[in-house]
Image (cartoon, rainbow, N blue to C red):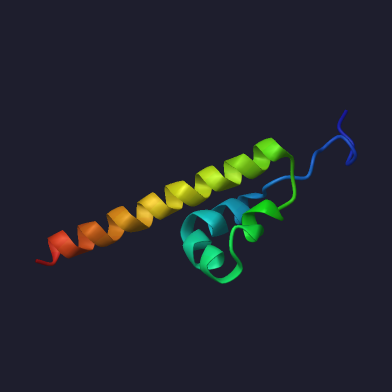
Length: 71
């Protein structure tokens, strides 16, 4: 049986979505401290950085796609 003490605090789905879509903006204003100050273990914080870089790649490909399709 799981109790509230058994569950480790970590990245919630809302944090993952924020990091993926708005991580670039968050890092511009607050630096990488936003990702490092998230709750969770070191492994979960690395996962946050992975979501950040995947989001960065998403936005780069998105704007490149917009550029080429609107040519």
